[in-house]
Image: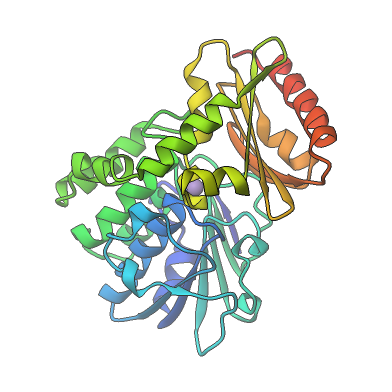
Length: 328
Ligand SMILES: [Mn+2]
């Protein structure tokens, strides 16, 4: 069963029924999780436990540092495969099941809840709402639909999900509804200032050094409209950083008026991955899809093959064409 977008009442009945009828859940999201992945997982797990159900939160990779203090974060299981006796797996924020990088999930009754265009509808129940600013908004609807009170323990991870996935309420997907949900979250006792401080003011000095190195190496292409960044294992080592310290840095060049899109080439352990960000109507999701990746209009990612120079030339040309096609 598949539902696109939200019903006027919130979460689709089929999703709520699928949850109500079952007791033991595994709650999964994508590998290399971000704030929306972890926040959505922790909030849903909290709601399921409120209902007396069992919820195991599984993540392939470590959580971002700023998520470690969220309620339930210490109970997250890290694994590359899921086994055990579950009635369903809820997969949040994943355009495809492969994004979890978890083996064994396909054996369960899958409930797919996501906001990525191009979701492959891999669940027994699918809810895709491309208009949601964060998967956390959809989880909010599920929590409401299940009649679970919005405690601070559920609201805090939802706020982190929405805060981070909207780029601090800057992205094009922010709507009145986003603020309506956040108003309810604040009313539940979550402090926006404290949450923002936890996300944006608890980084490492290493991250500052990495920021400097990244921007020092920035190249401007396509008449200065495309900023190209590069990071590799050596730069992380030199700055004393982990991979999660990269989060958010790709957005920095967008602060310049002339820069319309940013490319970040991530060259780690011989694998080349590319993240892309853009302004306004410039569609970098289409570029990512052409390379076998995905994402959103203004934020996408994909893998390419070495050698770096050839890959960079091709990708820069494609992103420059996307900039030409967009109006902003
Ligand atoms: Mn998201």
